[in-house]
Length: 118
Picture (cartoon, rainbow, N blue to C red):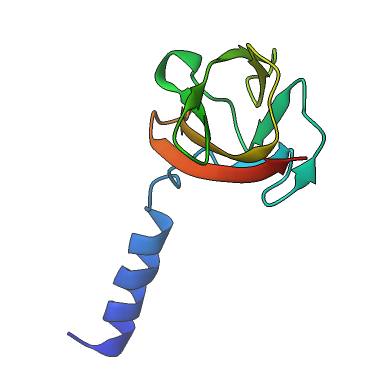
Protein backbone atom coordinates (compact mmCIF):
# COMPACT_ATOMS: atom_id res chain seq x y z
CA UNK A 1 0.00 0.00 0.00
CA UNK A 2 1.44 3.40 -0.89
CA UNK A 3 1.97 6.14 1.71
CA UNK A 4 -0.61 8.51 0.24
CA UNK A 5 -3.36 5.87 0.34
CA UNK A 6 -2.38 4.89 3.91
CA UNK A 7 -2.58 8.56 4.98
CA UNK A 8 -6.06 8.89 3.47
CA UNK A 9 -7.23 5.74 5.28
CA UNK A 10 -5.80 6.99 8.57
CA UNK A 11 -7.46 10.39 8.21
CA UNK A 12 -10.76 8.74 7.30
CA UNK A 13 -10.51 6.44 10.30
CA UNK A 14 -9.88 9.33 12.68
CA UNK A 15 -12.83 11.22 11.23
CA UNK A 16 -15.09 8.23 11.81
CA UNK A 17 -14.14 7.84 15.46
CA UNK A 18 -17.14 7.77 17.76
CA UNK A 19 -17.74 10.27 20.53
CA UNK A 20 -15.42 10.14 23.51
CA UNK A 21 -16.85 8.24 26.43
CA UNK A 22 -17.67 10.56 29.27
CA UNK A 23 -16.74 9.72 32.82
CA UNK A 24 -17.94 11.44 35.94
CA UNK A 25 -14.93 12.95 37.66
CA UNK A 26 -14.86 14.62 41.04
CA UNK A 27 -13.72 18.18 40.38
CA UNK A 28 -14.12 19.68 43.86
CA UNK A 29 -14.98 18.71 47.40
CA UNK A 30 -15.73 20.61 50.58
CA UNK A 31 -13.94 19.81 52.81
CA UNK A 32 -11.10 19.58 50.32
CA UNK A 33 -8.74 16.61 50.13
CA UNK A 34 -6.29 16.78 53.05
CA UNK A 35 -8.06 19.69 54.78
CA UNK A 36 -8.28 20.09 58.54
CA UNK A 37 -11.65 21.62 59.41
CA UNK A 38 -14.15 22.28 62.17
CA UNK A 39 -16.89 19.61 62.19
CA UNK A 40 -18.76 20.14 58.89
CA UNK A 41 -22.54 19.96 58.83
CA UNK A 42 -22.39 18.91 55.18
CA UNK A 43 -19.87 17.48 52.73
CA UNK A 44 -20.24 18.76 49.18
CA UNK A 45 -18.98 16.89 46.12
CA UNK A 46 -18.98 18.58 42.71
CA UNK A 47 -18.74 16.31 39.67
CA UNK A 48 -17.86 17.04 36.05
CA UNK A 49 -21.21 15.78 34.81
CA UNK A 50 -24.56 14.53 35.99
CA UNK A 51 -24.46 11.46 38.24
CA UNK A 52 -27.12 8.77 38.47
CA UNK A 53 -28.09 8.67 42.15
CA UNK A 54 -29.42 5.11 42.01
CA UNK A 55 -26.01 3.82 40.91
CA UNK A 56 -23.81 6.08 43.04
CA UNK A 57 -22.78 5.70 46.67
CA UNK A 58 -20.92 7.41 49.47
CA UNK A 59 -19.34 5.85 52.58
CA UNK A 60 -17.89 8.06 55.29
CA UNK A 61 -15.68 6.39 57.88
CA UNK A 62 -13.30 7.29 60.68
CA UNK A 63 -9.67 6.27 60.38
CA UNK A 64 -10.42 3.14 62.46
CA UNK A 65 -13.03 2.07 59.89
CA UNK A 66 -16.14 2.93 61.93
CA UNK A 67 -18.76 4.09 59.42
CA UNK A 68 -20.70 7.31 59.81
CA UNK A 69 -24.13 7.24 58.14
CA UNK A 70 -24.83 10.06 55.67
CA UNK A 71 -27.89 11.20 53.76
CA UNK A 72 -27.22 12.17 50.13
CA UNK A 73 -29.08 14.83 48.14
CA UNK A 74 -28.34 15.59 44.49
CA UNK A 75 -28.77 19.03 42.91
CA UNK A 76 -31.26 19.65 40.11
CA UNK A 77 -28.50 19.54 37.48
CA UNK A 78 -27.17 16.28 38.97
CA UNK A 79 -23.59 17.53 39.32
CA UNK A 80 -23.51 18.42 43.03
CA UNK A 81 -24.06 15.89 45.79
CA UNK A 82 -24.55 17.15 49.34
CA UNK A 83 -23.90 14.63 52.10
CA UNK A 84 -25.33 15.27 55.56
CA UNK A 85 -23.81 13.19 58.37
CA UNK A 86 -26.58 11.85 60.59
CA UNK A 87 -24.48 12.62 63.66
CA UNK A 88 -22.00 15.32 64.60
CA UNK A 89 -18.50 14.46 63.42
CA UNK A 90 -16.01 14.07 66.27
CA UNK A 91 -12.35 15.01 66.02
CA UNK A 92 -10.20 12.66 63.95
CA UNK A 93 -9.37 11.54 60.46
CA UNK A 94 -12.11 10.65 57.96
CA UNK A 95 -12.19 8.96 54.59
CA UNK A 96 -15.06 9.44 52.20
CA UNK A 97 -15.14 6.63 49.66
CA UNK A 98 -17.38 7.45 46.73
CA UNK A 99 -18.48 5.91 43.46
CA UNK A 100 -20.56 7.70 40.86
CA UNK A 101 -22.19 6.52 37.66
CA UNK A 102 -22.30 8.85 34.68
CA UNK A 103 -25.70 9.72 33.25
CA UNK A 104 -24.04 9.98 29.82
CA UNK A 105 -22.67 6.47 29.45
CA UNK A 106 -23.33 4.69 32.76
CA UNK A 107 -19.62 4.20 33.47
CA UNK A 108 -18.66 4.18 37.12
CA UNK A 109 -15.78 6.11 38.62
CA UNK A 110 -14.67 6.07 42.21
CA UNK A 111 -12.33 7.80 44.59
CA UNK A 112 -11.51 8.83 48.12
CA UNK A 113 -11.52 12.19 49.86
CA UNK A 114 -9.60 12.27 53.16
CA UNK A 115 -9.89 15.09 55.69
CA UNK A 116 -9.45 15.76 59.40
CA UNK A 117 -11.90 17.23 61.87
CA UNK A 118 -10.32 19.38 64.60
